[in-house]
Image (cartoon, rainbow, N blue to C red; front, side, top):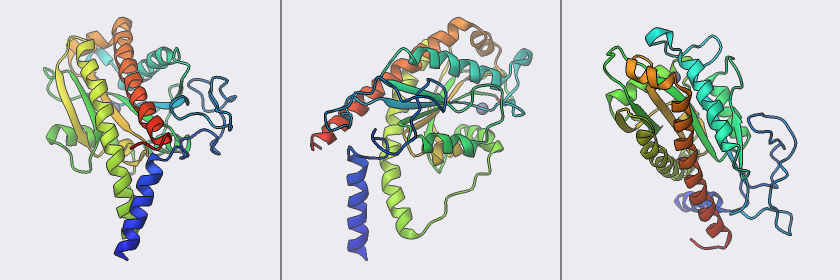
Length: 291
Ligand SMILES: [Zn+2]
């Protein structure tokens, strides 16, 4: 039994680095590419090798942007009626516009307008599209109006601190929070995949956060880990951004300006593009059979 577990664990690791994975083009994933839409024609930019499959180092990378809240779920409401759900959508649209300039990215949004989308549905959208990256966009709130700044999260079952636990508790409040069930073997295999995914998520968080802190004159509140539903259940590298506090007057003043949104969009886009280069390099090496 122990040998069987080891074999399956190795198999999972091999699949994680295999060029023909669920994210590879030529798979059975439904064709769609219109930037920001879930339906449409297959992208003409895909670069296929002679065997009909694209080189991993050349393939188009799918990024899912997740504007937090929406519809009846306003998210946090702060200074002078600043509403989180409106900001997150505007921010995601600014980022979509920026990323759409890169023809090697396919960018999808979990909501297009002011609509209710459950946390579980957001996860399902990203997983069903075999997305390569998932970025959830939020703004923070707290009872102390002097606190402001930017925080970047990736997943952990145990929060990295009280602030991380508080934020995840708030953002998870509209989800069911149910955990996946499974037997011990499934748990072990999932755990191996999870470790690889978490390492990538940490790297993505770092690339984004270091740019975000410089994008605006605001406080660097650090990179943290917590059990957000959208981070726990997505199967690709995923991060959640808390872009300022709606309860902080200075942050709100910044976030109301289109110029600030452009600066944040540029910072996130540059971070994502650097991560994509690393991803392509890693997958290109895997394709050549190199470690
Ligand atoms: Zn939120």
